[in-house]
Image (cartoon, rainbow, N blue to C red; front, side, top):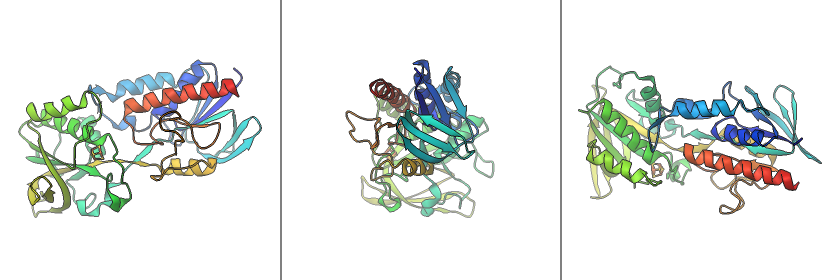
Length: 341
Ligand code: SF4
């Protein structure tokens, strides 16, 4: 069609949207700061709700990234951004210029850095890990043990770490961590059936048609115990087990429990890449630092600047499934824009 598009970000959303647009005949340049493509998907083992292997989606995206018309640029960032009559000119850190009739920003999210909740002991106590760490361990297939190599007798999953928390500046819900926590608890129960598992939650937000079933299964088949309580502190005992202090918000009473492993269910945050690109392109952010959508019902892929579109979790927290759907709608919006302009 003689029109070109630059997609900034080669994760799930960037590759999916670019693949569709390349199939429609556009020339698409995908700019990715990392050496490889597919984003954080490579860190995931199984995906909810159906527990399919994340590799299946990786393979799909790998094929999509080879669609004729797509050119992938790894290890590349955008150094400057300029408006011209026909669209935009972007210059990379390698001094290469890309002209584009439309730009898609698909810079994804960052996992909340759990060190910021110092009272939870991440990177202070060896047996405090995050859900992202646990997923990597599950993927690697190595036995799930404490750092001393012992099978944990008790594991506590802590929901809402870095989300719904005014102290860290993130008052929003990250949407995916409740179901991730329940999914991981089930996976751990399958590996270690004798281990007691507790999920400490504020309230369970199991978005999605089948997610409530996962929660029921966790209780009925996997004996996972759900405690409505907010963690206040984790400390280490002399034997490196952990003492957790929480408030049971149903009974209103303080609660103490010794466990062998704590898993912090970390939420999503806008990435530094999103902030940098948003500023370079002079597009607006919302109050949480994600890219601002001008109309959440009718323009979910538009930004405050004509010709610049958004795909995926740089606009708000999203699951893998939602990210793919958002990327597809971004491709449609870009196509419509390029036909009309
Ligand atoms: S999805 Fe659940 S764990 Fe995540 S922020 Fe929302 S309520 Fe908390």
